[in-house]
Length: 377
Image 1 (cartoon, rainbow, N blue to C red):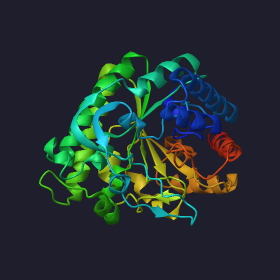
Image 2: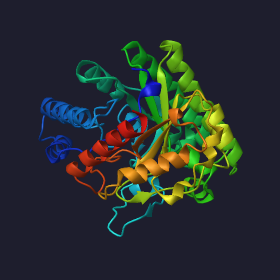
Image 3: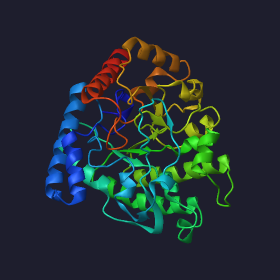
C-alpha cells in the first residue's frame, strides 16, 4: 500500500497492561526473570496489534510496550549516561488538569561519559514486528536532539563542550542503528521530536536552555542545527533502503495532561516544512495551543500532513462531524489528498500511560479510522 494512501495512523505508543507494568517493576527488583518479562512484552505487543487491526489502522507499531517511555530508544540502548537527580534532569511542564502527574519525558540521567552504541531496542522491536505485524509497520525513535536534555554543565561538558556536540555524537550512533533497521527490512521510520518548539515558543527555549555552539540563546541557529541533524538521519535511512518512508512527529510534550510548549508554526513553517526531508509530518492540532492551519500552505506537494486532531490524553470522544469540519478547514491551505488523520500523540509516552482507559483508547482509534474512511473513501 503506497504510504500516500494511508489516511488513518496513530503516533506509536499504547497503554500498557497492568500485568506488564507490575512485571517490569518486579524485573527491576530482581524478582522476575528476563525470560518471563519478554513473554509478557510479546503478549502485550500482540494485543496492541489486535486493537490496531480491529480499529482499521493502516500502519502498525508494537505499542512501544517494551519501553519504559519513548526516550527508551536512547536511555536503554546508548551507553555513557549516568544517574542524575530527577529534579535537575526534567524541564518544567505545564498542566491542563489539576490531577495531572508531573512525570516528564526526561529520564533521570545525564551524560557522564562518551556516548556509545549498545544493542538497539528498536532492532528487537523491528524483528518482532516483521514476524507478527498484519500490515505495514513503523519503528519510532526519539530524535537525537532530545539528548540535549541530558547535557548538564559541570558534568557533561567534560565530555562534550556543548549540547550540540552531544547531539552530534548521538546522531552518529543513530545512523548506525538506522542502517541496521534498514538492513533488517524496515521500510518505515518515524522520528519523534519535541525540540523544534524551542524555535517557536520563547518560554520553551528558556526552560530547555537552548544554546548555540558559543553558549548563546539563538533560535535560528538552533533551528538550522535541528534540520541538519534530522536530515542526516533521513538521508542515511534512504541510502541504506531507497524508498524508505520517513516521518516526523512534532511533539509538544504530552504526559497525563502535562505539556511543554505552545505556538503556531508560522514563524518557522517555510523552513521546517520545506527543508526537513521527510515524507510525512505528524502535527498536533487538538488544542488551540497549536495555532491555525495557515502555515500548511508551505508544505510541498510531495509531502503528507497527518493531522493530530484526536486527543490522546483525555477520555472525551471527539465527534466525526467536528473532525470532518477541521479537516475541511485544513484543506483550504493544503490539498485534501495530502492530508491524513491521527491522535495528537501516543497514548503512553511514559509507561504509566495517559489518563484514559483501554476502552477509551480503542474508541479513539475507531474514530480515527472511521473518519478517514468517510473523508477519503
